[in-house]
Amino acid sequence: MEQFDVIVIGSGGGTKIALPAAQRGLKTALIERDAFGGTCLNRGCIPSKMLIYPADMIYAIRNARRVNVYADQQIDGDFSALVQRVTKTVSQMSEHFADKVRQLDHLDYINGSGHFVADKVVEVNGRQLTAPTIFIATGARPSIPEIPGLADTPYMTSTEALRCESLPKRMVIIGASYIACELGHVYEAFGTETHFLVRSALLRQEDDDIRTAFADDFRQRHTLHMGFEPVEVRWEDELFCIRLRHNEKGTEKELYAEALLVSTGVDPVTDDLGLEHTAITCNDKGFIEVDDHLQTAVPGVYALGDCVGNYLFRHSVNFEGEYLMRTLFEAPSDEPIVYGAVPRAVFTVPEMAAVGAGEKQLQQQGVDYVVGRADYADSNMGMARMLENGFAKLLFDRNSRRLLGAHIIGEEASDLIHMLILGLQQQVTVEDLLQMIYIHPALPELIRDAVRDARDQLS
Ligand SMILES: Cc1cc2nc3c(=O)[nH]c(=O)nc-3n(C[C@H](O)[C@H](O)[C@H](O)COP(=O)(O)OP(=O)(O)OC[C@H]3O[C@@H](n4cnc5c(N)ncnc54)[C@H](O)[C@@H]3O)c2cc1C
Ligand SMILES: NC(=O)c1ccc[n+]([C@@H]2O[C@H](COP(=O)([O-])OP(=O)(O)OC[C@H]3O[C@@H](n4cnc5c(N)ncnc54)[C@H](O)[C@@H]3O)[C@@H](O)[C@H]2O)c1
Image (cartoon, rainbow, N blue to C red):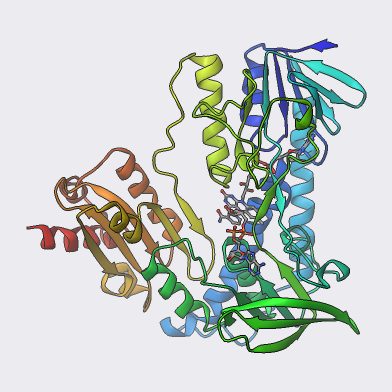
């Protein structure tokens, strides 16, 4: 049995612990069975955003006429070259980081599949390792719904869609959330005809006004089959045939397409971890159960990231890793994890970003709130850019005048939200947000205008 101070399974968010632990001189084992860097680097955030940026550019060129720039005659996006570059870049980055990690003192980077054989014993490549503190950061994989026929077809998940070098003429997309919208945006921008099967709503987790505005904008470029679910998939003569049924009316129709993207959420990667040899428990979906210190049912064994599923973002697993590192090693303390304001963004056209409470949540909680709203079109920069759509919507507590939530749809939403993330964290009021000087005529004046709208209703 090999004795370590720290064992980490998974090199995505797990690196937030393994690397600083080794740098502190703790004898650390980092176990990874696939490419170094996990989902974000190899098949998630990074390659998707490397594809989304050129897609945004194509979209901007297509729409440049509104500001008297006529560049839309000859847009020639080389999708195949782009995908090859993205694939090469992320592979090189992964190998580069793995090489660096192999050179770190106190760190044993083990390429292999780890599984528990007892509460505190992990087996990998025939070696048995133990440590007083073990971290499980094994992530999640695409969840595949049980649709008759689907398993016998060459459908894609995000993993394949990010590496697909040929552009399909038509793509059917099952799902209506982050991955569906972001990858649908990429393919449509390069020329694919996109069809979304939307069971309930696009971005159903978002504030109603944002969802409605998003769908109104999105349907100008994508075909949305609202309320339809796939009931059968066939692969015939190099084409997918997808039979859809309306979930209320029961009507059916068939769609044919060269490509099918399944983007229906994720399942935790916990089924082959040997957890049955431990006291660690999972919920009915397989996510590892942890307490408010991210500790599993086995003292000294912690879990973080997608395999826990408190949030499913890279920024949230980073936060969890930093919390664990701080409270266990850097400044030991018994403080529970407090997530505060966890923001989110969907990188599409239109872009959206949000943090904090939505109206429905506040209504359910019986909170008395006001909504401050401002349209991009009415802001100076929005007017300069001739932006017709998009708005910021801020929710404030009527009594304390504190910010409770922020929702933005439109250009640079994922950047604009940042001042409001800090605002929520610092519990700022309407007055705090109006005391600062906004650069004129930068886009954040939109936020100021929304705060003024709220102030006018409060005074
Ligand atoms: C297409 C796509 C786009 C995304 N875009 C964004 C975005 O823009 N912003 C954002 O915040 N989030 C985004 N996400 C989500 C984000 O990638 C994940 O939430 C995050 O990467 C989860 O990190 P993790 O450390 O929990 O898991 P992972 O990064 O998945 O790491 C888990 C690692 O554990 C390894 N592993 C699993 N089991 C074992 C085992 N038994 N032994 C050894 N190794 C094992 C896996 O190989 C993997 O490398 C995106 C996801 C996808 C799929
Ligand atoms: N920008 C970002 O931060 C970003 C980008 C991509 C992915 N992610 C992360 O990756 C995770 C996975 O993303 P996702 O979009 O696949 O999952 P999701 O869980 O957000 O959405 C799943 C979608 O699939 C639909 N769906 C589920 N089962 C279905 C079925 N049988 N038939 C039809 N529709 C069905 C749901 O209604 C929903 O629209 C997300 O939780 C997200 O946190 C984040």
